[in-house]
Length: 309
Image (spheres, rainbow, N blue to C red):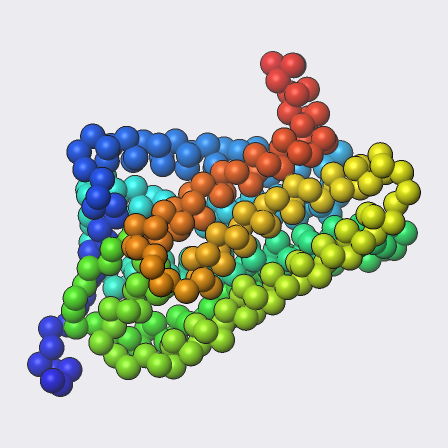
């Protein structure tokens, strides 16, 4: 069958959560809406606090501020349209809209992976090279590393975007998901997309695997240094400076690897959507809460603000 004889698909149908009906749909909608607003407010609070409080003018909190910015943008790319899909119990999205959402999702997700890697490098320097830390991790390097994370994320996924724009869709046009995820979106293409599938496979190395390995190497060095500290209090105090980031990295890469690196054999679409839901909606809420609860400086500032009110 030639392309001319096929029906050209101009939009897709996102099913959302078809297994959830009636009042449960409204409940899910409002829960996600509340979580979305709470996450944005907490991230905004961190951004403002790091900007105005001199106690937080250090590389660790600068990178935390950038993480809050990235996660706020990441959420906004997915959640507003996700809420529309859930409320309508399925909604349409144009091909251009789907490609745009897929590209931004991949680009910002890549930037976040590398920012978490940069934060691990920052903790490595602070703990393993404390005497040279301030000299190496100066303001110029901090800004260069953040710029690198953003630029690399968008430039690397530009290759994926070029492939996506060349895809041809002739039906079906139903995506059993709440957003235009890369894999189910590409699966609907009628084009021969071996080059794109190869690019996705190769792209997993600089996007997920290499950052994950660098994080592991950094923390191996950190743990070795911590175990060499003679006093128990010293070990606890040193570990506390990186425990928040380690928890966030475990949550982030854990869900990411489960979604895209673990073979899908035996996994249902519902399970995949649930894991994606945790990765996109729940994890960004936990991340700033973890930092607020486990970092003494932020906790003290928040307590003072609440007392003054």
